[in-house]
Image 1: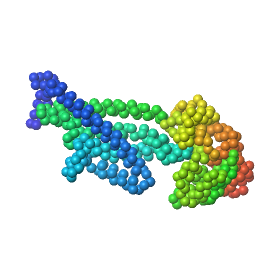
Image 2: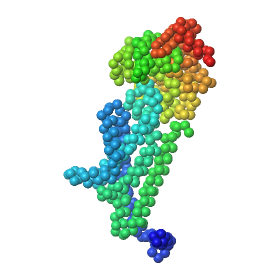
Image 3: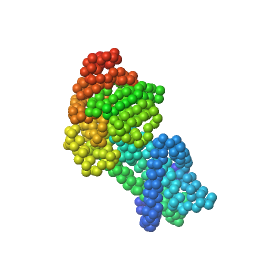
Image 4: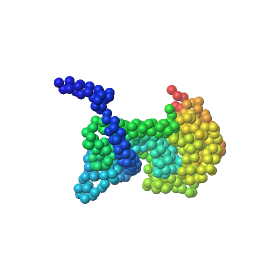
Length: 243
Length: 249
């Protein structure tokens, strides 16, 4: 019974898609909804991603260095931070920063709240990537730097980090692409980014399927573009590696 | 005396690798360090520029630097010590993200803060000296092992060290390539560089070294001129080691 109904619905759907009387794709709505959604992307999704990722990478580098340092206190703080962020849902973190803090009198606007939450999140995850890539550089590279008289800092910045960067590009790109999609969670704290825009229009028109599919395709286009850029960067950095 | 080492000790955890090394290196002399694997010869060499931190003892460079390792030396002292010597590694350890000439220029520019144009000239001359003037813009992975090791030598020379340290510089090389690296080292000896070389190439040691040091079990068992140590060793352990090397199987 259920199966039959479903088949019937799908058949109807396909018929409509192919241009029957009541088409499933409402082109007029498509045209009128596309621009607001793209606007949400340009105004919020992209800046939110870029700003959070930049701050996140700085936090991640400092956290990785703290974890690799000889100081037990610094390493301990870094470990707790990473554990707390990785051990709790991003949605909960967002809610604590926006709703939670507001309820105890510390009101932060939606956009900066989202930047704080996403930066902290990227910082924790990327710190593990950066730590692993620093450790992946052979010990002999440190020694070669020290043997020509470099300080620890000089060896780190001139010799180790450039090599670690190459190793970390694929996993960091992964984090970046995840972040693009995760910013849709900011819709829950009133940031009118791409997905929130589609929700608002869908609430008005009841065309959930069409609007959410459009949103999905827009995210996909952005992420696909980013993977292409990732490939280019990897190729560039691979020039000194034996093939 | 360029370098004097006194009562140097080094242990890794419970394992005592160096149990009191006394060694003098005269200015302009070539010291070859030989000994069975695990004897501590590489560790001793690496202690000379504090890549391994000795637990006890002193290292002195002429009158201008004397470091005691009885307590942890300061970072500044360690840097001073390292900047006195250049090191050539068994596995080259070139910087893979830099071309041959950039490898050579790195020390003078970053550590000694010399002017780029001057360093460029210096690096070109050094690469010419080791016979690689045509390869200077290639990355390490584009070079053969022997070529990489020669870049490694040029990189160590570039900081104008008072002492050159070689840690088994030909052990990772194919036999037919060993010669090109040894030739470069021989040239340096003739130019009067002070060098300490850990090596298994007894013939080469005999030809190039002024002084041979035989290490076993964390001690210097015997040392002296090549003719004495290699042809007429006094200690039974030295005899045994040479026998095994000269008559394998």
